Length: 296
Ligand SMILES: Cc1ncc(C[n+]2csc(CCOP(=O)(O)OP(=O)(O)O)c2C)c(N)n1
Ligand code: SF4
Image (cartoon, rainbow, N blue to C red; front, side, top):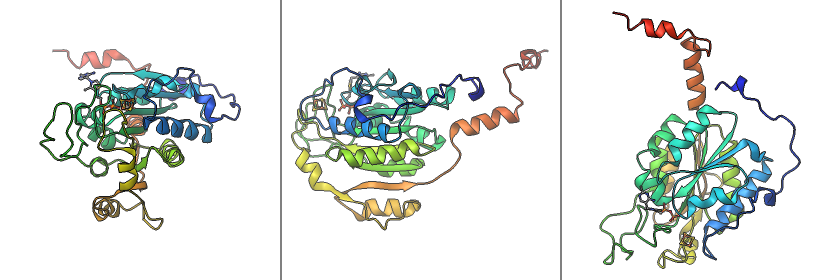
């Protein structure tokens, strides 16, 4: 559907408050789960931008974190494990006028969904991806994930893991994401600020949120996460990709929190619209011209 064909509601909405984005469905997360801070950050970011819930689509995969859309007043899709990104890409291309938010976990995004991540970033699809990283598979009761530390003993790795954790921020920078940020879920204000920036950004915005699973990850606790985070210095140049990567290495065992990188290039929907224009595409296009190409 072309943007012109979309009948959009242009009536200004009343000033929204964070609680106006509550869906009425009570969160099913364990008391003390880090994801509450992320949800609160999402509510606040949306309120600050006064986003109309009828113009918002929240797509998730599978996992505890992927339950987030149920708690949010928006159009929503709870899809398949690892597939939120591609489904959200379809939503964004079909309706570029909507705000598209993806939410999911570390296993969802970087294990089963890991094949999609590079292409979300490199195509610069205009959506905001909030990934809740608890260094474990929560919903399936505590198996190690691609971000688990090697020595963590877990459900299927009782003697510790056999491989090193991956580095999500470095991956996303390498894949070409145009907005890369990290926060800790205990700081809902920072979550809100970075999610807001992601929603405002035209392009693929990736927000990595360290979010403790108090029930199954007894190693990477809230205190552990609090101890490893370190603010990105104010003087950091967010437009310099090399400096963003360098900062991650410079911080060594610390995790940088704040906005790491931001740049601009055409988004997938804009490139696709240009392609349609170049090809003379229109909904009135004579389909026989295409079929005739196959004439013997
Ligand atoms: C195709 C498929 N494989 C496996 C599962 C089982 N499964 C459900 S949730 C999940 C992982 C959850 O971990 P994560 O994505 O890190 O989210 P969390 O629950 O920790 O928020 C898995 C493997 C599934 N639902 N579908
Ligand atoms: S199992 Fe872990 S991630 Fe899932 S709701 Fe409970 S604390 Fe949160």
